[in-house]
Image (tube, rainbow, N blue to C red; front, top):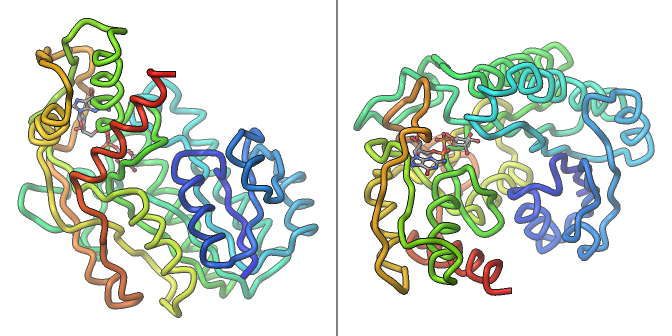
Length: 314
Ligand code: GDD
């Protein structure tokens, strides 16, 4: 299948493109820069700001993809508080631009929009596996924008008679994820300390929260499964079905460290509004595609730490 991927130069984009190529798809990348990864993959790349609908329309006309996987987004919650206008523009207008440009060339195509578990917001409670029918009560600029985009995309999909899928992807982690996300923040600090680049104190935010984490290569397997299966249009959770407390994740990461590290709580990392506990139910995705996670959690943590050690040891 010819698959156009937006947000191609980002963390998930890299892992997704590798997997789609491995599955023998023809991949076209859309990114805001032609980074080293995209050059190394030798795939056709267009440098496009998804807010520029004219350029987007041209690219769609030139490429005529069978499917689109829309990853491009402002995905960091604290950044969305700092830049709410940009978050609304990129996450809502950008998503709509991509959908409309695709519809104009291939109304029969499959559109997969990547949304977030954060859309459930205040509905999330300790011990309650979230299912797709439960109400969304998003409570930060990021999750409000992702929920609006999802609703907009699905509504236009219905109007156009298109097959539109929108995921609610729970937290993911893996090599290549930028600082600003919890596992990357922990691993990068540990690696910097091991390399003598920082004092042996790890700064953490609110570790009383819990999240449902999935390793990034399982996440992209889920996106490929939605692409390749005859799953109906609609909303799909992408999650492991297990919640891990951030405190446990911190200790699991520290157990992999090569030296003693002290923990210091940094009040600046606390957030204005925080949903403490997320756990998802992946039954719908599993029934539609057979997907289930296969990567082991500790191996995933080890891979992230190795990634940061390689960066700091260079
Ligand atoms: N980033 C970060 N850094 N978070 C920390 C830290 C730290 O040092 N210490 C504790 N935390 C806590 C946060 O307060 C939050 O409760 C939890 O760890 C996870 O934070 P993030 O990794 O930033 O993820 P998130 O849950 O806010 O949002 C992510 O998950 C969504 C899926 O639910 C993002 O990746 C979103 O893009 C994604 O959609």
